Image 1: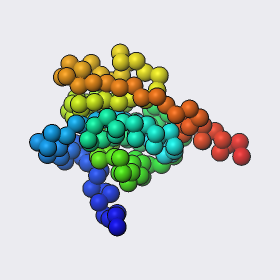
Image 2: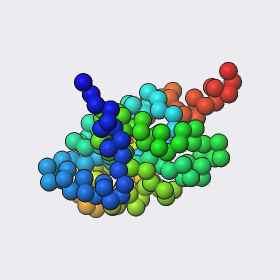
Image 3: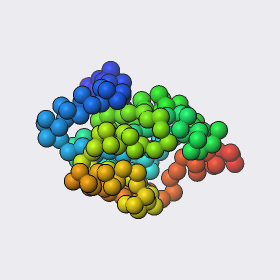
Image 4: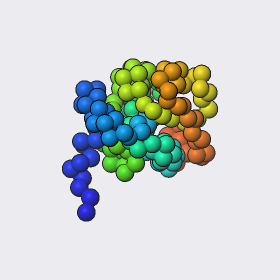
Length: 163
């Protein structure tokens, strides 16, 4: 039987994540990082998180804080608050750690984690992925994962408005 008490313990602060990273690295785990808003969790998110998790042993997910989502997506977002979004991600079996970041980009988070693999979905190029240059310079790799077509939070919200 799975214990749900472990789920909140997968949500980290900057300090607790650094301590956990040391433990994971001592065990020679390959650290993977990805990030996003994850406002309304859907099949596309599951596909991209599964793909990211397959790139290593430990998957860390950075989640945009509510204020950052408002700046990126507009005043009507997020639909779910940062704690709810982090908790849902932490409940997923493929996710090992979740951390909320306040900045508009995860640059500081990426450079503090310095993952072995940085995964970003979508129509990015290596040159446009925040932190890619730094990860590559440290010997890591950057992967652009395909997006599962037909699934987006914006699309879900729009379809709800027309019903």
